[in-house]
Length: 241
Length: 169
Image 1 (tube, chains in turn yellow, blue):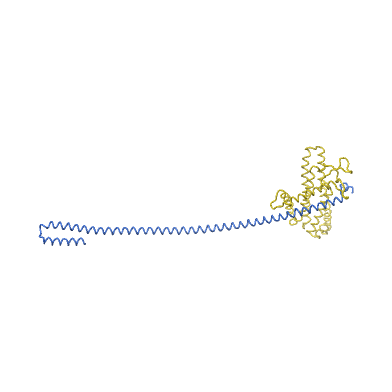
Image 2 (tube, each protein chain N blue to C red; image 1 turned 135 degrees about the vertical axis):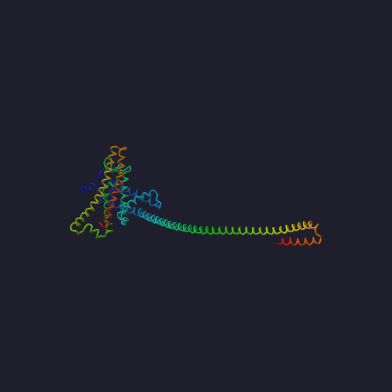
């Protein structure tokens, strides 16, 4: 298993990797779930509706607690990130990921995995991080105004203290990208690597605790990513910061 | 560059993943969050309405309780007045009955006395009459031997007159 996703084939010059296939499966699962759940929305929720309402309520309540009325714009992004990352990570724990091999003219030996966790691709985690940071900054402009937003990065108050703080803040936006993307990528990639090693060494029984651990990591990483986004969105939109 | 290549960073893949997530976020917002928000609001509205209904019901219940209490107090007062009136009426009836009984008994006693007096008078008259007859007979027998018929007649008449006077007195 290598750091970069394995290209399975090309479609009009676009490299279809095993993580792209996993992403499409994730999309299908989420869309199917949304269609099934949204068709059966009632005032008295059933099990499925209850589950999704619990997740949304969990993030919405936290967002309302820390950000007040701004939560209306914050929580949909946060929940979207959580659902997308959690589903991507959990799907990767199903049998078939890493084990089904794909043979092409370019592949050698046992071929390459046909499916690989979408979040073990840095392109995916970086895309999520960039989206998160851009949306966070957009909300900052929306709630604080362009002047206050720019003032966060470029200020001549108590020269040169705030200028230096502004440079740090600006740098911080880029470090967010790195921390967001590499944290998720690193955790999921390392988890897959550990599981693959365990399956190779002791295929029966022994990997089960690691699978349980990976299931936990899958959810925890989704929570970490979405909660950090929420906190950054709160800080960026709060006028006192 | 080598590091980027090592991690497999590819602009087309990055763009694909970004657009893909934005589409998923849009779908989630449009078909999941918005309907759910609408449902939350509707539910909140219903809960508020139910709470209002409960509050109205509570107020109505309080009013009903107050009214009940008021009616009970009024009934209690009315009952007290009625009981007092009935007591008075009973006392009056009792007194009237006692008075009537007393009057009646007095009347009975009076009538009895009258009757006794009449009887006594009647009896006295009869006794007088009988005693006069007896006296007459006794005198006539005693005097029949001493006086002449004419003297006898005079004596008898005078004796009868005396008796009559005594009886009358």
